[in-house]
Length: 167
Figure (cartoon, rainbow, N blue to C red):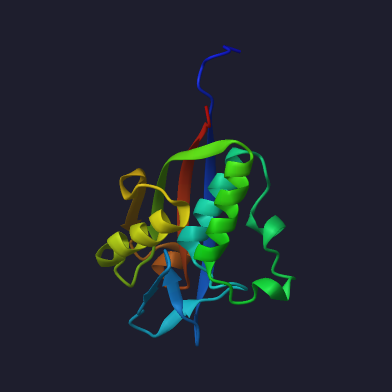
């Protein structure tokens, strides 16, 4: 290995949660309104975007997944704000000597429309990670009525994070 060559690590993250009644719909730390008054079911706030980013960050360094650090069996994390959990994950990543180079995510949801909320989501994630908003990519797509997202049974998200070693 080259001594002065910068080191990079890439991680992939994925999350999906079921849409149910009587739950808030939180994505990227933003409370959205589903036309059928549905929200995401989970132990924490079930924020699929933030969960997939955290899993990508942890995966890049082979540190496991969010269930290892915030297990659903622990009542401490019941209804937890995922943005706060994200701050704990970035602290862990930085303690290992790594920084985020960039993030790219895709939220898959038939409804509600995600596009009008992307700037607010980027702001929330940027603030939590102390990262320039221009280094955070968030896109949204539908599943063209196919699969659980298309049938509005759930919402999913895929994320990729590139980490660089602090020099």
